[in-house]
Structures are given as C-alpha cells and as structure tokens.
Length: 400
Image (tube, rainbow, N blue to C red; front, side, top):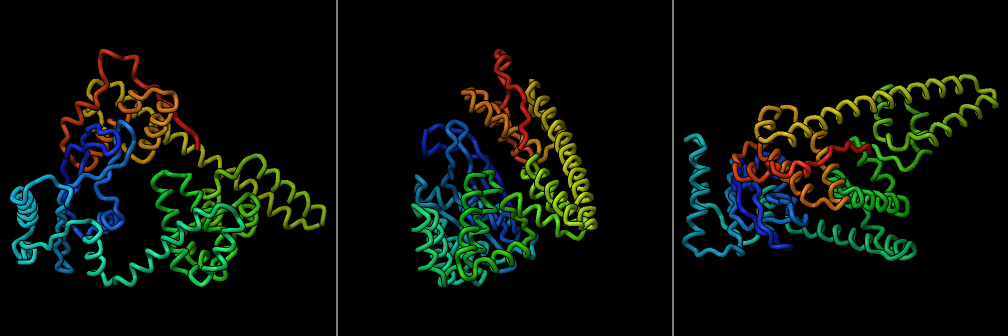
C-alpha cells in the first residue's frame, strides 16, 4: 500500500506556495517506492515559480510485512504540538491497518518505531536489510571521494588523487559512480551525467582496477557507453549479430553524423586498396545496415514526437485540460513529457515565465492523474486563462 495525498508546499527559496502530491504510507515490498525512499527522492517536488526542489515535513509510515517492520517519521520541523502530531501518526496507522486483511494486522503495526529524521529512518530500513553501519560508512567514504575527484582543479591534481587512493578505486567504488551517472541521466540532468561519465572514464584509465571493473559493471547492467566515433566504428565493425548492431546504433545515435559515415567510407576505401575485398564488402553492408537502422529510428521518433505534440496541443487548446487528460490518459508516455519539457525550456529561454508555469501545471496535473490523485484545485490552476488566448504556448518538438 502506498497512500498519496496532496499537500500545500511553501518553497524554501522563493516562499511561494503550490500543491504537490506526497506519499504518506510506503510499502517496503514495493521495490520502486522503497528505492525512492532510500535514495531521498520521496516527496520531492519542484517549485513551479523558481524551480527549487522541496520536500515538505510530513509524517511518513514505512512498513514491510515480510520483515515485520513498521517505522514512522515524525519530522522535527513540524510546527505541531505533540497531541496533533500523535493524531496524524495514529491516522496513518489506522489507514494502513484498515487496508490490510485481518490475518496481516500484526501487533507491531499498531506501534511503529518513531524517528525524527529521515536519515535515521533510512538507516533502520537498511539495517533490516542486513546493511551494517560499517557498510554505510564505507559507502559514505566512497561518495566523499567522488566529490573530491569532481572538485579537483586540474589534471595533475586529479592524477595525484588517483595515485593516492588507487587501492580504494575498486568494483564497489565504480558501481556507486555508475549509479550516480545513471541517476543524473534518468533525471534529465545531462550536464551532471556527462561529468560523472567523464570522471568514470578518466579514473578507469588511470587506476589499477578501474578498466576491468567498469567493463564488468557495464556488461552486468547492459550499459553501452561510447566515448567517440572511433570507438563506435570499431565496435560496429566487430559486431557479430544484428541485435548487437541495433544496440550500438541506438546507444551511439548522436555520433552518427556526416563525419562518422565519412570515416566509415574512408575505412572501406583503405581496405579495398589493400586488396581485402571481403572486408570491404562487409563494411559496405554494415554502412547500409547502419543507415537503414538510423533512418528507421528517426522515423519512429518523428511519429512518436509528432503524436505527443498533437496531444499536448489538444490539452492546451481545451477549456478543460483535465477532461482531455482523463480521456487520453492511456496515450500519456515519455514522449509526451519530453515534448512538454522541451516547451517549458523554450518558454523559459524566451522569457515567457507565465507560459512556462502554465506548462508546468499541466505536467503536475498529468502526473497527478497518472497516479490516481484527485486534485481539483490543481486542475483549476492548470486551466489556461480564457481571457488571454495569446498566452497559449506554441508547440515545439526538439530533436536531440
């Protein structure tokens, strides 16, 4: 069970108020929700006015029936008297108990262990998973080391740091660094993702165990990382199956420009002059296959983005965007949010902040609908003002 409700949030930066969904009851057997909780991403929302990330101080009940665990966060920042706070916690406990079958209503659920900070509550969950304080300290040390590497002012300093900490740059270290890179990428922060990737590549090259560790991690999680066109060309040339070629084309799509195909053509000419007819034929077939796959991906992307753009336009042009979202909820996907984000960024770039805020409200409303939240106030705020039709944003579809 994961209970969501809407609560007013006061931005810690601009002091503006907005509504945001929060999770008040977390099922520890829901791995996605548990991961968000452990990583500190639970109940994070972005202020529509200034973009600051905020997390409201609200009670959170965490339970795990398999581990017989019940924990409750009673944040010290709550400006409530003890009686009110206990009532709120009691309401959470009752909601959980009432949602469970009779045979699952165990005594420990009625008396959850209380915590004043999210950090200590996370530690308790990890301890129940068998993760000791010593393990946490080691992870914290690796995180601190990553920060130290990131802040190195120049290459010579970074090389000295790598030499000093070479023994610490083991599989677990690169596993954490890879997780940071993936998280930044999933959150859309390409600058941070690229910075972590560049650091990982340098550390793998300069450290004793790095290259082997990175190769093992990437193979384990199916991650394809390409540094440049030369590497992409080399790996495509060595690919033995169509599936491998398709995976490399997808991973290296941004590298497949005119320069790449010129390099491939130069390689074909070179092996032809050397009299290696078989290799030249294989490379020509590879070129045709890569062009075909690339064209197919671009056409599919164009169709998907065009469909998402039309849907967003329909939402924005409606006097009741909430109704359109309800009717087209099964069509809302990553492409819709990609187009929406592209339009928000374009509006910000042009200084149309009110348009950007209206688009962000559409995004919040859509997320609330997808999560099954009844958010009438949010829906009202998301409606474009009828008296200002000229403020309705133009839809732009970015190509990345």
